[in-house]
Length: 154
Image (cartoon, rainbow, N blue to C red; front, side, top):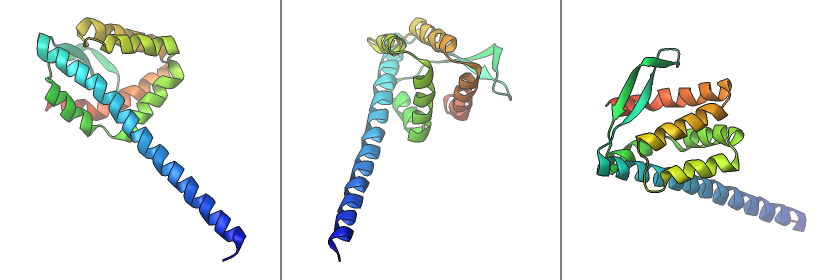
């Protein structure tokens, strides 16, 4: 094998290693972030017994203002639900939010998670996101919500 081919092979292996480590790192980071949020929400709901009212979507993925789902989930159930959402869907939602939310918006949302998320904080987070997203982004988020809504109804 020539020196040139050896160098190319070494570079290819190094790039593949970086890509694999980056993918694994992203996977771990996304799951860790979602895990912390679901843990906080689950603990709060378990401690307070307070329900969170979630919107129901009609068959066109539009919010049906006449209906809602009121859920109280314990930490174990939140963890179980979290594992059913694919990493690619988590990344897609984070990507949508990243395009629309400022650094300050993220800080505000993260502050809501500190000490647990109650119905008041949930509504404030929902309102913040609702006002920042355009219609296209809202429709994309609603499609992911609709995809997993059945998990809450089981």
